[in-house]
Image (cartoon, rainbow, N blue to C red; front, side, top):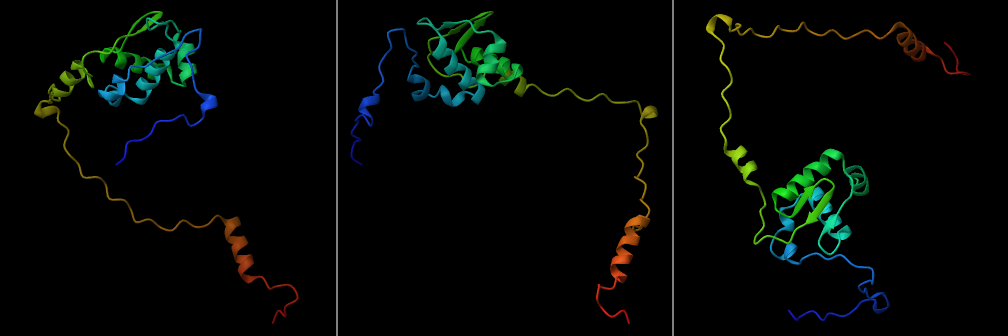
Length: 171
């Protein structure tokens, strides 16, 4: 396969860095697999914070405004924020967010989640034999009889069935 020749598709729309500042994303986010370990809300929050942060990655958006801008519920925002903190991508100390430099390698799960996943489930409590209720077979339902149509509906159907079309000979 021949190498792709890079050229501007719309030279008149070439982007440039504005004098007021710009946002940037470290390419390692994609190339080294950080992005593949993020949920959709985590990705959305990460990109938004990278976009609105200053040159040090700092921003201070309130939860209500942030959730509204990202169309996330407050619970989803909280979950995304905690996920990004566990993955060592951001820090949050009310009201300040900091997008961190990327760690050496991606952490697609946190150790607390892994520990919980490996922990054995507790055994259900056992009742003493005297308090254990006997197991009963479910009652057999009576055979269902067809429910009669309400009188008014039955009469309408009966009239319709016995009706003679207009103009027909009623013999």
